[in-house]
Image 1 (cartoon, helix red, strand yellow):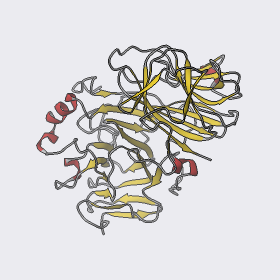
Image 2: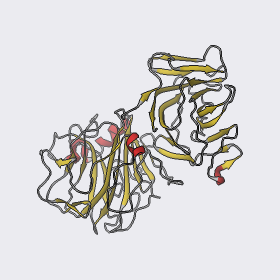
Image 3: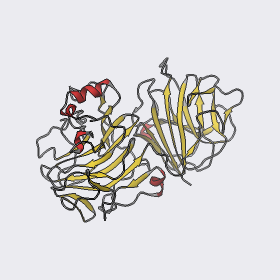
Image 4: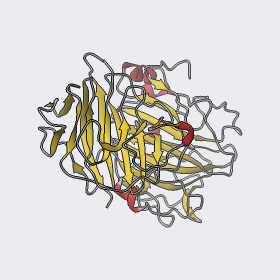
Length: 431
């Protein structure tokens, strides 16, 4: 970690993809064809920002049109040849995920800025930067705050990051949700920072960016690709707007009451609604289940332990419930137990295949613990797509099962002894 960055601001995390890409992130192409998002990727909200033919989603900074020099489309790649200035997306974004691939020339330098406002003469004067660089050619150490995937001048990337040699494409990803920035490089999360802390403002004030009004505090803005005077190539530029509901999304929880839900095995449900938050008291034991059944879908929601007591405990999400409503029914459980969020539990012998090295009996451990501190909101994304179930915690791919029995069933949220809160429970059908 950069010694200038306190732990409360930035977390450097290591963990590579240990299983196949789920549809929450479009799979990186090994060609230069810029394939369009798949049906499941589109359902998850992904769309292409470059089709390999025309840069219609981009324009010059502070100008209405794409530059007539310095940028060109070559063999399906978006290439910066220098002299055209920075380009920005035509649309603005607040919370988003941006996936991209980049290749640098020897000693090449560029960057991806985000939440850029057109209030200064340069994109970097309002937008934080994901650094794009030839680390080896420019003599940068992996954890230098100016090196590839760094949050430029504000946070260094993890030293164990993997950068491919000059001439090869790297896979980048930027994710901002609820004021948390994540930078990814070749499947590894290398930076995580909060934008809503005093530390964030202190980091800005200690940098060159303090001279520019509005830097790092824009609630929304453009994504920019920087012209730094070197040849740089980009492809497979894709984005999903995390602040917008994808087409077909269903709100399973209306934020007011328990309409559409019932409690099993019966009796008064230990769930109440306060200010749009679904609060589970933890007793009695059971689960709140949807009255409707679902087979293939993307389920998204936030959860936290009580911010008042910060007491942690156990809970879980029950998928494809079948048979008798009892404690516990036959289903696949996506675990929420503190420290184990992202585990699988196979309840009732559901046919499924998981990583044998992480499986013991009905439990498959998560690849890593991505849960935030007790009292803070976490986000869960669960992809149930035919015979595959993939779990994502706070943007991290943590578990996957394949060859899962395919049958429609209700979705349940467990009451298992400890107060736990839920919000923004949404479902995108994949059928």
